[in-house]
Amino acid sequence: MKTPSKRIRFPLRVKRGSSTVKIYRDRRGGGTYYRVVYHLGGKRYRLHFNSLQVATNEAEAKAAQLSRGDLDAAQMTGRDRLVYGRALEAIRDHALPLDAAAIEYAEARKILGPLPLLDAARFYVKARGGGLKRKPVREAANDFIEAKKAQGASVSYLDDLRYRLRVFSNRFACDLVSLTPDDVRDFFTDLKLSAGSHTNFMRVLQTFFNFAVSRGWLSKEVGLLQSTHKRKEKKSPVEIFSPSELRALLEAATPDLAVCLALGAFAGLRSEEVLRLDYSDLSRRPGFVEIAADKAKTQARRLVPISDALLKWLAAAPHRAEGRIWPLSKGRFFTQRVELSRQAGVPWKQNALRHSFISYRLAGIQDVNRVALEAGNSPQMIFRHYRELATPEQARSWFAVAPGEAVNVVPMRTLSLTTHS
Image (cartoon, rainbow, N blue to C red; front, side, top):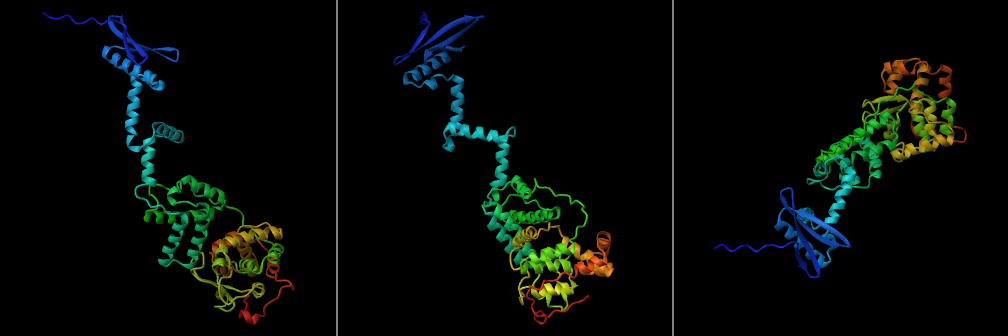
């Protein structure tokens, strides 16, 4: 004979220590449900289940938590505990508290916005990880310059690299791998370069970044110049200095700077060419300034006659038998030139010394082909941009600007120079 099962009387009471949790049975809509009821902080809580076994497990867990005084855990539902357990399991290998992991995730979400966090992490590993070596920007720049030197790069090209990469290294005292495209974009914004200089600077940095990628210091996935765009050079009228403005600049300049200005004003040399010039370039071909191919912008050698005006300013300079015409750094050259403009009260005009030489020289000799040879330009360029900017009378005044009597002029024989008209 089958023994009748023991009848369960509700509400069931689950007791742990001084804490009690009750289980009630409800019949609604043709189904049976179980309520787990407990009190916490003067408030009554109810949880509903459709299985007596699940309700009993929950009641026992809640009674145990209440007995231990684990109030936060006691407020968790079964689903909450399931989520909590999964979260703990997910971070178990990282030895990180759950709250720290949650805070870090929330901060990352603020930064990324709607972007997928996993995609960002995978990109970061490609861009910053994957065996990349940490290399400070300054050290990388020095290694790049040494590599170019070993490849036989010209002195003028190496000087240009040193100048531009020194400016870049001074801005970023960090590893290359830490840079972002926005960092580089802001760097260019702060430089406020002309369109041509902006493009030249971008070209140098692109070559430098390619070198860094080849050495494993930078990921090819990161285009550091992708936020920096080439600037369109605006066509502007050719500006020249007047003879009186030139005199004010030359008389206010230091002896070394005055020589550089005179080479631009009376021989039409570009600033970059002046910075590459040695004193030997003034005496190698008597009566001429020789701009060798590796020092000329066009990479074509040219000779420029030394006029009477240029000879006088060269004679007044602290002459040295050898070494650079400008003995200091490229940065100091441009800084001193800006300061000179302020002191002399003459607003600086971009490339105006060279423009002035071409304009006044053309007005004086009326020979486009000859001026083109001396300036290292095409006759078409000379004719298009410099014709009718000055009169012959103004040209005579320009080439008559000479040092004042207070200047101690070195005897001509010391320089071994002659002049050509």
